[in-house]
Image (tube, rainbow, N blue to C red; front, side, top):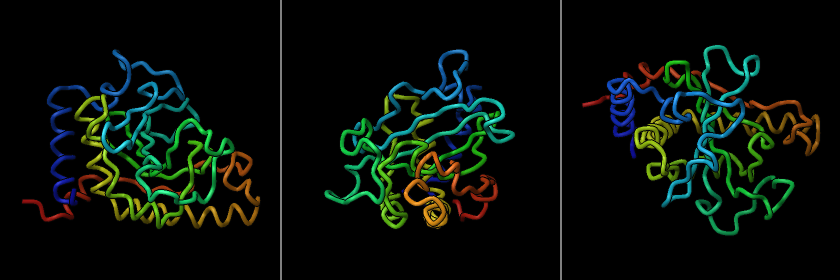
Amino acid sequence: MNATDAAHTVIETITQMAQEQRPLMLRVLPDGGESHFWKHYPKGDARDAKTRSRWYYHVHAPGSRDEGEHGHFHLFLHRTQLPMGLEPKVWPPQGEDCKAHVTHLVGLSIDTVGIPRAWFTVNRFVTNEFLFPADVMIEHLPDFNVDETKEDDLVNRFVTAMVALYREEIAELLRQRDARHVELVAKHGEKGYEKESGVEVLSQIPIDLDAKISSLDLE
């Protein structure tokens, strides 16, 4: 999906959500929109039947989330979407026995009315990922696709399109993530990738969706 097609899909999905008066979070959370802090929605994550890319949404407790944020998505590639035999830069403590063989692509923060507000990357321990270098992740950004999970179709298509629309920005965030890792490892050794570092978010940029779409030559 190129940026133009992605922009059209983002506009289409957000418009339809608004017309149906069901914002994004109400399509992700249980009926009524109630959520338990930190819990993954949906249970077991949303997994694409073809690509094995996945997402989940969750809500942090007040005081541990940015002002104006309702919740955020964590977006992943599955290891099978990367070249066979490619060694992670950093392994989960469980190694090959880790339950989820995924690598974290990026986080997508959503505001209280269901509009995207920021992109961010996290330290390895936050999602217990198989960590791969930025250049690997950037090369495989086009492989992220969650159009065919069992969850709400508009949410699936919106998330896929947002990644396609913001590939350049996500690529830069991943480079910044790796640079921050270098700093943390210099200070903490291999614990720089883990909870002992005391650092969760490694890079972040705000989203101005109107400005982004206006920058494209849409027909």
